[in-house]
Image (cartoon, rainbow, N blue to C red; front, side):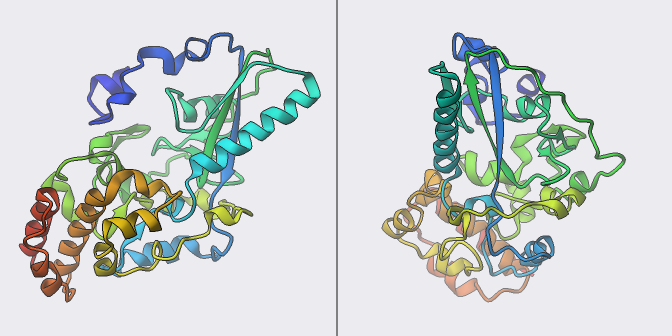
Length: 317
């Protein structure tokens, strides 16, 4: 409630619209007595051992558009929700019919806090959940059940004096340990925020066009991050290592086709181009040969995209 009172949720009205239902599972799903939490690793199968270094290196290639690792494959909502339902069915085979409802980032559920209290890990200073065997590169899901289960024991935190995530955040969105101002977060700005991106954050976005992994890439615990055995999270063509101009040039039809079944689709084509326009401006400032392309988009039909293209054209090295 304090986080909401400070306005840290920005445009995410849904974070405030359900009151305390987030903290009271039985008010969201009447009859709930216990919550089963689950995690699912998402690093692609082909991820190299030095993957954090490889990802950080992308930031030094300003002409390349960076999509957050989790979003390069299939929409995790679909994958995890399906598996939670299968788990529920297997439980029913053992104990008989029971009331249950599965969630994954899809309802007023305090996922990270429930996972921490159930012993899945501890909340890092970036607010994400950390696990000693898996870092933070995993999705969370829950099954609310009407069965009284033994409670798990929470684990102790193991961040110590480390503040690498706080230091690494390009926009200083982690305003204090365990406190995130979403309005400053690049993931929020590129995904949740619908309007113009505040100019004070545009340069710091670099070539990140959907999400941001920086606080996780510098976390020492992610040397233990696990690869997913599922092909669902393998990178799709065009979402890893692609040049900004090529991504910007996707027509709306091509955007919809390439992002079918992907979490990226929900931001829509206009925001996709808005984000890339900012990245192009940052590439221009760093000496990239993108000026002619930007000038060709100066009269873009979308007022939102056009504003960001004009900002990009004003960036010089």
